[in-house]
Image 1 (cartoon, rainbow, N blue to C red):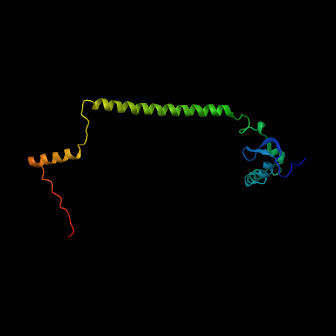
Image 2 (cartoon, helix red, strand yellow):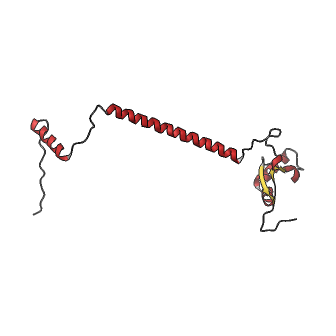
Image 3 (cartoon, helix red, strand yellow):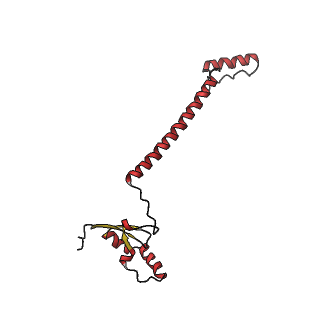
Length: 154
């Protein structure tokens, strides 16, 4: 029974043994995969090895029966396991960031404690700076500030 042209027929998922376990989910995807460059290239490589009579049923197997390396089973991670792994990694990253923030905060706290004995360095205001300059000029340390000439156009 052929599926209607507009609909995708559902069926069992299969994997292509020749293409390293490429997952094929339905009949439409199977037809596309068999016509793909990757599958044709894999077929040519198999034919070079002397297996020219590979049948379609030999090239594909059910996805749940497929093993990547032959005897050993593939370790498949479930959705719950993946979420648990991601959440654990996220928690570890948050803990590391919190640890760094705490270290930076402790460093700032030590700096403030070291500076407590010292007066904070503040820049004097404009009038205070002018008074300091005049005092230094009077003491002979600096030259007297130049008076600004106003430019008037006559």
